[in-house]
Length: 367
Image (cartoon, rainbow, N blue to C red; front, side, top):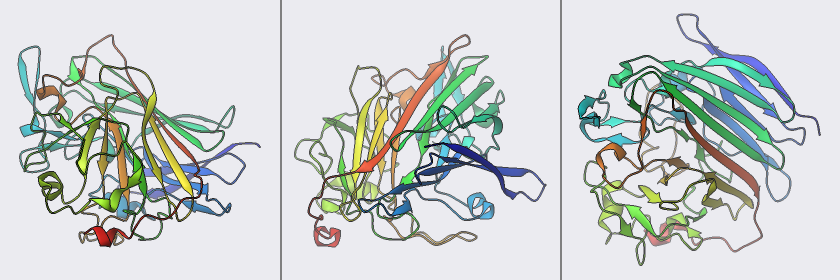
């Protein structure tokens, strides 16, 4: 099958700036579309067990909706994914503070993170597999972060339903970097508002990171044993998503937590598996990062002007990244990038079809 890359204009801002869309097609019906606004994954079309094609990632129909998006829908996240307490971090004894955008906290890089940037087109090719490469330069002091950071991201649609996302970043002054991709998933069909909490999930992790009332790490690393956070064996997300006896579930109104993956290990590894028994679609997430963050879409239903309505828990985010507030946790993986070094990270989304299994119990029965 012959792959292809189609380049079109997705929309324009009021100042005339064009946002482009690149559609990567593998010749089998599978396709992925990428926007230059926020280096976002706009759609990912794959077959179900009957061969029927559907989009499985959340997105919007118009640029205006993306401008109003508070959920980081399909976006590249940087400079620092997840939360920083009071925006504070220290490098070589010097204290820095990033711009706050969630109370006193800095979330996903600040008010104008990489998700709000217009990325530059670098190159595209159809062979050996459909690929597009985008770039962004974050100037010194951007959102309070030191140093100029130059980032490239390559999206490639490979054989057998594999979408790879590869990040590379350099800096001219020591800074912190923690990049991730914020795709939202519904393997039934992401263009509907069907409940995604009946998806089966597996996370091969013995420990997770509990949070306080501000959704920041307490500093502990707790065993998942006997808790709603034990996904070492595949089961439904909705089984314990409203457990009235679990304080962590109550704080987050569901799941909005990080699991530690391969502690001390390096290299690409399977960090999560997601399945729809309704359609048979299966997603494997592979990453070289130290954590996987599961957000169960608890607040997607909040009303917002200028964008299409969504239902709470109709989409699920799986974010491969360093742990939240890593610069302020003594046990977290180092996130400082220095001049002469290159930050690299890889995320692979492997889409396929799972064996037939019984549906999960209706999530409402567990509430």
